[in-house]
Amino acid sequence: MTNTVQTSGCGAPAQGSVLPGSADLGNQTVIAGCVLDPNGVPTAGAYVRLLDSSGEFTAEVVSGDNGVFRFYAAEGKWTVRALSRDGSGETAVAAKVGLNETEVAISQ
Image (tube, rainbow, N blue to C red; front, side, top):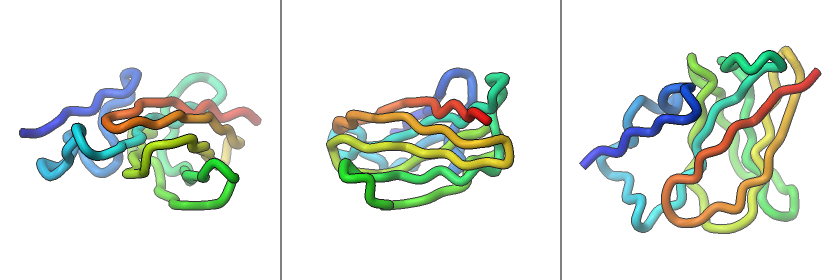
């Protein structure tokens, strides 16, 4: 079984338009989303960082062609921070088992 991820019209995560067949949304916590520039346009090439509840760096990916990103994480409180040539932004995520979709809006 495959799981298609659609995030606010941004398309699929950089890892592909479909979650891998090995993704088990009944047992895994996935944080996926889209980075948007100040005009609401998806931003490719942004550095997207996952920070734990204490603000410590946990992981980093580069947003895909349509501004998309994906992390596999544990349940809990996370911060997703994006850094691009247009600025930076962050959003808090209270992740639970399954797909947790979010957007990160960049401001100058």
